[in-house]
Length: 296
Length: 224
Image (tube, rainbow over all chains, first blue to last red; front, side, top):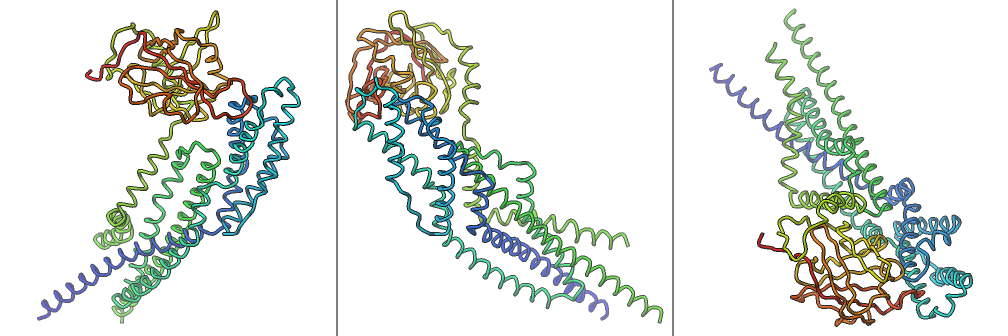
């Protein structure tokens, strides 16, 4: 009779352990997803993007690329290949960089920012007029139609750099993405809470601590393993975008995002260690209680 | 005591690692379409070709295989086809005592045209018995086109053979004129073009086309 009772107790204990381990496994995936969602939600804030635009020197790289592109336009127009290197002085480049930062900030925040196109056209016209007046021999061959076309091309290039399509696409979808991530966080939080209660009811205090350790440490590892690998091996530097400004921004943004994921994983592992300590303390208390019972 | 220790070790060390592997497996199975898309996007991004590097890689082959006899054939299996931004040959235009040596790149983007003549990627390679379309800026590399006359010889040296073409037509046409060249032609012809008029200030709507026919050079044998 006693043997049968022992077997049934062992069976139910094994079943409970298996069930708790399975719940732990599901829970660790949910926790990893929840932490990832929280980090992504933070990364989608305008502040985070603006910080990365500044830290990656996006503006100064964009200025260099714009000058190169404008020089590309100047070659077929019969101007020297470094025409804009001379024309766009430091003050003008700083002005463009400030304008670009203002434009991007307003786009990220979903606000309108108007650029004075006529002023830009007038600036390019000034450059061409200055060149023609310096090279009087050219004056006869200059066609006003061709000059207008050249100025329009230059203005288009200038405006293209002020309206980067990639940023516009991403930031226009920021609010939608934020909403989806927020809903995901709420849903995941509710599920995780329910599963915690289930686990708590299924186990005693010591076992609960053990499974919580398992859940949180596994969740932390799942969340942090790949980002840590990518950061340690510097895989992000292999991103082969030829546009240096975008490359620099994406590198900076991704590195910060991965660092945040690793930090979140560190927090989970730290919490798991608290449960480990609680479990060890629970075991020690239980052992001492058994010892006391034996002694009495 | 040992069993208890091993059990504890299994729970506290191996189980989290097992969960990690199982977790990644589970996530991969659940989100494989997104993960595969991410991996291919990453591959596409990280394999972007560096223009300077490509030039260096190809330079050795260019020097090695420079001299191959005329009027022969080259097995296509022996040809290392260039990728975008690679310099795979040069164009030699001779006018009186001047020789214009123009580097030939595969692709015709702005950065390429700053370095030399660009081979339009939608056209054919020399030796493929069809149209080869090459462009360059009128103020730099193709400024010399203004000196060309009907009957002049243009030489194209690639990493797999030398080709000679004879100028048959010189025309200034509208940039959208579809009669300038035929990319589906079944005879070998080289078309060089640039903005027109030459030495003009400003972008133009006209292009100067130099149509040529093959004089000599090896053809590419696709059966070998």
